[in-house]
Length: 316
Ligand code: SER
Image 1 (cartoon, protein in one colour):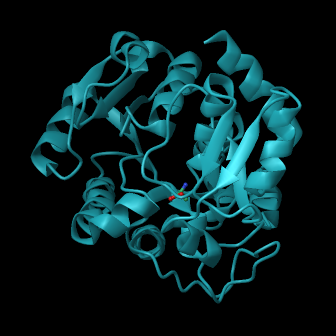
Image 2 (cartoon, rainbow, N blue to C red; image 1 turned 180 degrees about the vertical axis):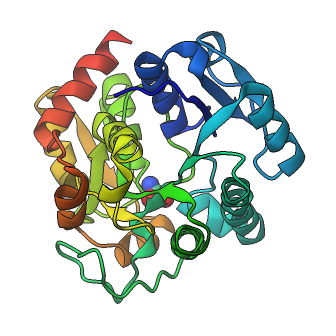
């Protein structure tokens, strides 16, 4: 695969950014992957290759970092997620939207050649289908996060159509991994539950027992991200964002799997404001376009994911 273009990851200290940097460095070589964030990341990211403090809203500095390192590809992972965005809508809109526009504009001016930007299942809303939600359906999100992601998708397609910007995107479901903690999302429980199961043998869930949502194991999410970026341009036919599906489960279904590893595990439920966001999202996703266009295929189901999480977390 690997053309050795210099890659900049913005938001490298976050849940996905952390894992993405580790994988990109493994595939493309540590000197070719520049990690960046507004805060200092964990030791592995900081020590494992070039690192820059960077705020995506600071256009001048983004330009400086891109030319300093000869960056050709940008993975823009910095964003406010659903729960934090509701608490600070103005800033969330600014970060999620102007961050993206800054990078798309740089690509339009040919300062960079390729952009990855993640969208989310949060583009769907109460009027979208619940089961096996198709690629092209009603998208009427009613969260700030969802609105910013939907607008972002429209901008991506617009820049591709009008200015030939090579931007690629997938709609991430809730993401679960053991190397990094999520922050500010509605689906975060699916990571926290593992830590609490091991530490305390119990977990109080902020979603109702039967609230099923689309989810994906981090290995699959990182692979989807790199695969769409490495796919030949003509195979990436959708330039807004692709549905990608991993698995779908509710908190009670996840608890059953965890009990197989922590026999005394107890889950209790105390729904909070995040329940209402979750209820507007689909339960499961149809990803036929990603499968047919660039060969996407998830590898982890609920059982396999739980086994892998448990094995890795018990070693940490
Ligand atoms: N994981 C996100 C959230 O919960 C959804 O994309 O906000």
